[in-house]
Length: 338
Image 1: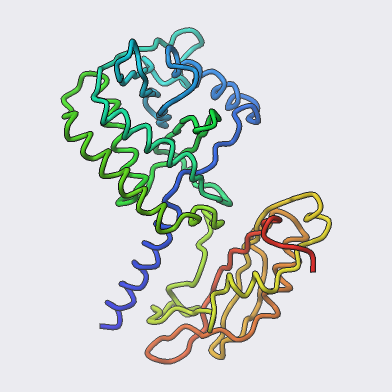
Image 2: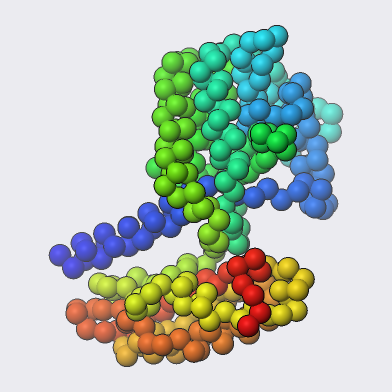
């Protein structure tokens, strides 16, 4: 029974983490990439956008690791709502210059599908997740989304192979279906329109319920953030170690003294601090796993070393030592010098 409870808690923790990062991520300006990668980005995107309207209403670009790149744009052409797609003849990265062809297809769609896709793209590109680290993997597909705000500003975001069951996965599936529809494949437009409308409703409900959730900084990367599911001796934890009375984030916000020199320069960053929580709830051996600036690391260690006792992990109903990795974001707009 205890093992079942632990498994449920671990799954719930993983689900909450996936839900918290269920937004698009920032797109780094392509002009900042150097070498071959920079040349790739600056070449492949104009090619994929061949013939698309310059100011995107709703534009979707897919960059697979090992197959040809493709793109889809939702537009009005000659007064008709249209899906337009471009597919490269081969993977641009592996091709010789000048050998890649663009296959363009299009299909007229209903006004309702056109409007749903436009509203979806505008909403998701307005809510870009504040992330530290990198979610990119060695393979998979990275998806880019472009739209134009009500003020005429181009908005963009990206997602790398979204997790199963998330809103971003549904977004990708809707876009892929629209892309296939534009290519003349056997896709039901009415079914696609229903799914797009349902997705838009879900996105709007989330936006109304948690309008600022995407602004909360999150870490994504190779390190596991939070409590460990096993003790130092390898035993399964029944109750995870946790900070008492309030969240660790609330405690950090109250204790943070932002490095003055970095605050003046509007420098942001983050720290990952790992430590052991012993049977008494005392923090032992705090050390830095990752830091974007030495002064951030120094402040993070000061905060962690001054923390009160935690509630330790439980094994067999008894307190046990366990490790914890704490993510501490530094955002100058949220702090003032103390």
